[in-house]
Length: 235
Length: 295
Image (cartoon, rainbow over all chains, first blue to last red; front, top):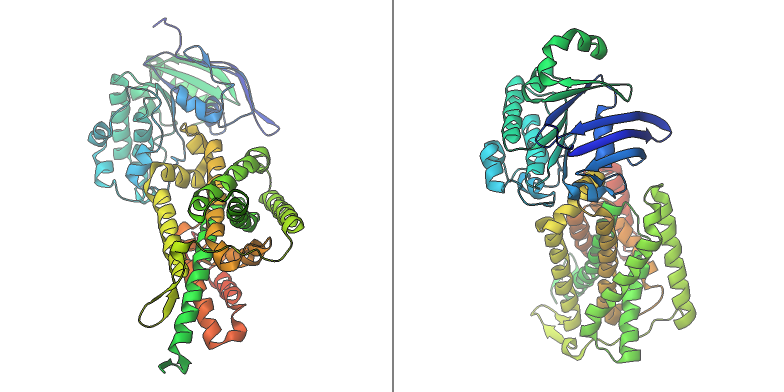
């Protein structure tokens, strides 16, 4: 795995208004990799995803997808370049039914899953396709939020705390889905607090603290580094 | 002669018809306002002026270029829509990041300028605009005579309202619009060109107002102030229906039009304030409006 990174972030600084929240973040994700960002609440994990996506506009540094600059693009062009975003708050639309929510994001390239494939992967969504999006359970909304970006043909998915607040059985289910996506060659940048969940899917970890990358290590070292992580994460 | 509650039935039916006609315009105008407010969060005070522009466009097309009513139904909304798109691109779009009050002030200023300019060019008096020959005369409905043109306006406005509702509720473009009304940033993060969607929505809203203006030209005459008189009532309709609610705007438009007509029959003294009384009651009982979502 010495190929050039698919997604490359160099010296990324970002600001919320006047407050400087990311300080020179570096991050590489190679094609087909699942990379997990760890860190305490407020360490800048969600902010990093929002800055890559371009939702957070005040940024400096380098963000490249397959060598193509993303920093200068307007927000809607970032998705079109091939990045799918699953926000922490899930962002299911109340005025759209499940099927409309699913088909809302425009296709950005070939190779996305068909609606039939998605319904095979998420049978619950098929059953509830005519329900109002926000009438789904939390777990179903999370699955819908993930399913929504699979259709578009995005090459990289930014996944923000997909297991937050969900029952263990649903967490298990979402883990299975991520493993299935990995098998399909999907590249995933995951923000996750749940170690056991992250361990199952992550090839590499990055550790963030106060808007900086403080460490990175391969997935199999997670157990050996538990003490160190507990100290940084305060868990 | 037949009477209901001591009112002669022809007078009653006549006022219901007038109420339906007025309601048709309330519905078409509040519909556009609701669509614009829902997505752009701009209270479009220029809506009455855009309605007036539509009527004047029809009048000028006929008198300067000899272009008839039917073509004006297409060309006037198109022209006003283009003007609105230019206004949105050059002025309104600069105000999305700041307080909603600035959008209101800008459109209010534009309305004053447009109405002032047309009053300067054409005077305050109304210009007559004849209904097309195909729609003159009246039909006997059995219980009353109805002018053909008025029947046409009611049917056309229903078609326009239902068509717009279908566009928003049943199409992909409409799904973008509804989703962006909830969370524009996320919709744009999915790859939808939301700035373009905002521009088109403002253009569409203004074109709807202009279309209503063409339909109104043979009924109310073409006058620079025709929009000013109407727009205050239309704002009340939008508030009663619920800011941003499409269905609310349509239903409330027709219902309040008819209620106003009925008030003219049963208690004429209250007819000019009945809509505002209803608005005050609705605001007290349900501040989000009859069809609005509580935020």
